[in-house]
Image 1 (cartoon, rainbow, N blue to C red):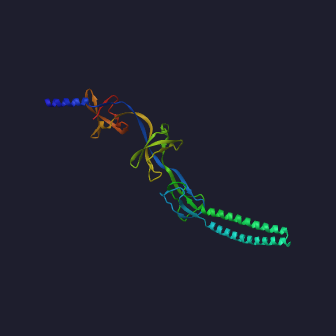
Image 2: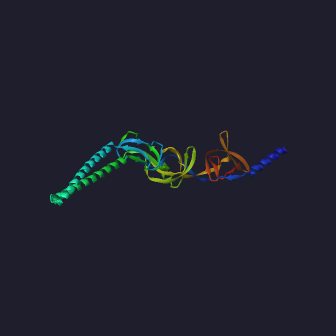
Image 3: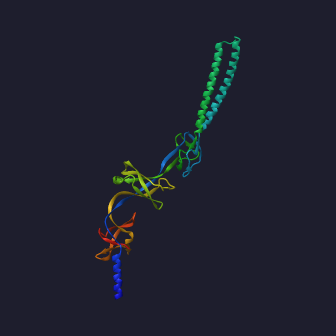
Length: 320
């Protein structure tokens, strides 16, 4: 009996000397779970400058391309025929110019002997000049057609990943149609939040992003003023949005307000038979109270559990 009395005395002394925490309401952030979409910062179509048939197509969805890299070739067969026709015209004009220059040379020799008048010589000189100008104009027209032919090469407009290739080799397209769509400039997260939370949003607010089974931090950098279909659009910057998919949806937690809550250290909550208990120092004794706890909240000074019922402000919680 004496030994039991001593043991009981030691237990009471240990309980009395145990560390306690006095509960008081603290301010916690209210989070709203929404879905966000990972989007490319710049989405640029690679357009064909020339209408015709796609003869080469070296890019497909998912390829990484550099600005200026050739991804397709469009050819218009009519341009080849036009170049051949212009070459024939230039050849004919050059033959006429050769004959006109020969007549001009003879005329210059005959005018000195008085056989040909000066008026006729001027006509021959003018005819040679007209033919030379016609050759120059035709060659310039040929250069324009050659330039059009070279514009059949479709280059990537920016560095990035090929998102969409809407056609195949052999397809016929018009000038200005997109051959591929390039997504570049990095990734960002776009949110669509119910308008009832619009007044609680603020720029530079910290955002929680759940992606690929891990949680990363982001920052709300832009809130768009126009509400569409009852939702507010906002953009989030995050440095670890590396993903193989664009327009992927991820779960995001957005701060939409603050509230008062009772928090106890997570290790102070003991679960037995599905019921949570917290030890409380009351009237010089340590007793256990059944509580209803909520989510686990991480704070800079540790991990806490929110107590919904079973405790009140001012209670002294005994820490293990």
